[in-house]
Length: 552
Ligand code: AMP
Image (tube, rainbow, N blue to C red; front, side):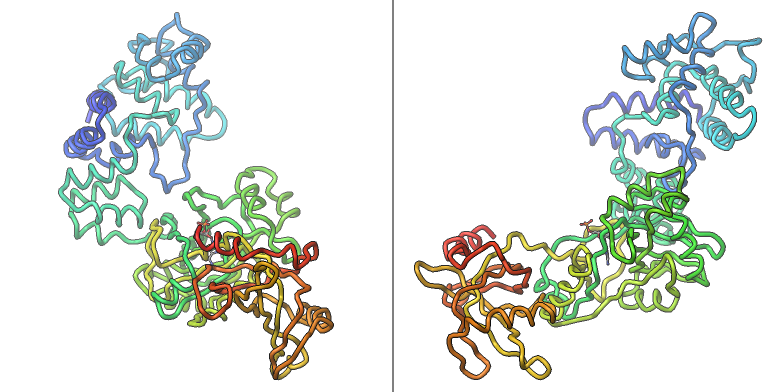
């Protein structure tokens, strides 16, 4: 396809207001794109290279202005172009208005073939431009750009200029290309979507849809070195998880940045959640992954910054991502490591369809943890109390909380589905008075273990639950010592305690209940600490409990 014809199509598409019409016109263009289909798709999205490639053109506006000026003849300078862009606000319009072309002789030094410019030629020349490096490369890059502008017609120059500066902005997004692909080649949108999630290559997916339809699309496999969209999580409660799945896989929720590690047997590439290549800034993870694997694999995990083993806030990792220079120095200051929690591909086999527990098994078989790489530590549980314990431990260790995952679930790239839940954080905490307790059992018989919680109710108190979770042994000892002097009565293991100490308590939900005198019960209460600054008279009241319950 000639580039001028392509530009006509884009001008037409850009002029439309209706999304539906735009999608139809894009579908028409895809249908006639012939051998250029993959390139046309990328160019429509304003991309010279597929999203999964880390290659960039690296053409600054100034170089583009100079090349345009050169193609615009002796009366135009780079400064003129820059000034016009400042007024017009669009490099495309400025390029279209220049009287381009026909520069021969000296000005045309470096100019190529005089035949009409084609889409594939633009693609080839830009690829060459991106590969050009070393001595004299500035000149060569400038010559290539000049030649392209010099041979483009006015609309062609408009979209070429926007393309090279990554400012295409014609109202065609990934959703439009997905729908137009389905429309043009008569395949279901869901199949196109699924193929995109696995490959992230809009050109490849369009070509496959055209050549081999639905069957071909569902054959698209993972490729080591081509990032996959990350599976995402929703918020949810422990109870929802256990009710729906029976058993739940509980993992720590690491506070870092999502990273996918691809190892092809020789080299490691790392990709961020939005599939940017973050290999360079994370050398210790690269080394770690290389050392830990003996076969090709794609791992999913979270990169966390640590200081002496303790997690640092996630901003530290993001800072590292942005760092292009001086990685060695950054490495000395902040250590990062990958907590791998999933395995999408192992030694030639795609695992997306396999249940999570089996993917975890493969992960454990495949990865030999060491410096730079650790494995997540999943626990399969059916017991809400055990889950609450794990959560308390995770929080105490400085993690963000826990993730709850369906043990039987497949890996669904890009989907914020119901199979991965981040536990809903406690919305608000309650300050409750301790009005009773129970002695522990066995090794803990000398310690108070479970504490009865109450809210203020007029001059008295109303019970609302018991808490035993989230308290360390040291805290239990201190609390026992402190509360013993307030014990009013004992009946077996049960102890009646005079209101004196206020606990800050987290919970998942407030439910109506006949078990406690408040008429409500805290679901999964968790000890957060003693409110040293509060007397029993300052504890939360039944009214606040009621209003919190109402607002859930
Ligand atoms: P959020 O960013 O709040 O939507 O939470 C989901 C994110 O938590 C994921 O995209 C991961 O980056 C991160 N995460 C941390 N630990 C885990 C884990 N064990 N499993 C899955 N995702 C995790």
